[in-house]
Length: 56
Image (cartoon, rainbow, N blue to C red; front, side, top):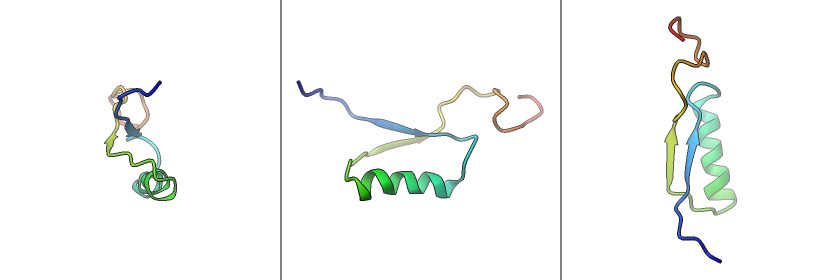
């Protein structure tokens, strides 16, 4: 049964590089033609130590 949903893919803000994020978009939309229209950068809980800031 088809579901009328629109995917939103999140790129992690605290690890990796912008080049890796670009590669993920290319892999999904160019290589595999998934046609994902909505991408976001980070929806993680802030202050979890990922980025190494003193307050984290």
